[in-house]
Structure formats: C-alpha cells, structure tokens
Length: 142
Image (cartoon, rainbow, N blue to C red):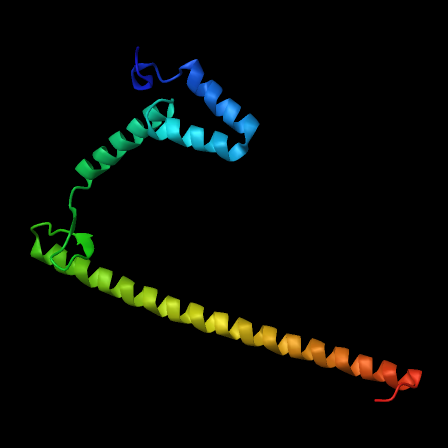
C-alpha cells in the first residue's frame, strides 16, 4: 500500500476530499486545502518550491543582510569604511525622519479627534436646542 505523499500532486482523492469538505462545511474544506498544500500533496508544493528558490536567490544576491552584535537587523559592513559611514548616517537621518513623521501623524490624529468632538458637541447642542424649542411650543413643562 502506498502512502499519500508518494502519489502525484494532482491525485483525484485529494481534490475530492477538498471539494467534499467545502460541500459539507466550508471550514472543513478550507482545512483540507491547507493541509494538502502544506503537506506537499497538492500543486501548492510547486508554488512553495518556487518561493523557496526565489528566497534563496535573493539571499545569495543580497547576502550582506545580517544581524549585528546587538541583535538588531542591519546590513553587514562592505569593507569600505567611507561607504559604511555614509550608509550609517543616511539610515540615522531616515530614522529621525520616520520618528518625526510618526509624531506628526499622532498630532494629526489628535487634531481630527478634537474636530470630531467639537462637531459632536455642536450637533448635540443643536439637537437639545431643537428639542427644547419643540417642547416649549407644544406646551410641555421644561
């Protein structure tokens, strides 16, 4: 008896299991699909292999990416001190700019929240004035 993993990636029983799972209860079909893709028993195996080859090629071409001694991600040295200093300074400036933009974003979010509060208060005050005016004309006690 052969195991499922030795069969070809398009075995009809796998496809039937996924379709039947979707027909019975969609989470069951989704679970079967995910299982077959990650178990390598479905055409997703070729797709996953393609991603792995692309990742390996990128690591080979951009192999300078490494972790520094502090555990922070970063590019390893190129061997050219001037370029490494330039890159370090540029990254520092970019980080400062990112922090400045984050601060501006927080300030804008606070500004928008204040605008919403003011608009809500204005609408509520208008509602209360209209309601009190309606009560006064109908003869209801205030």
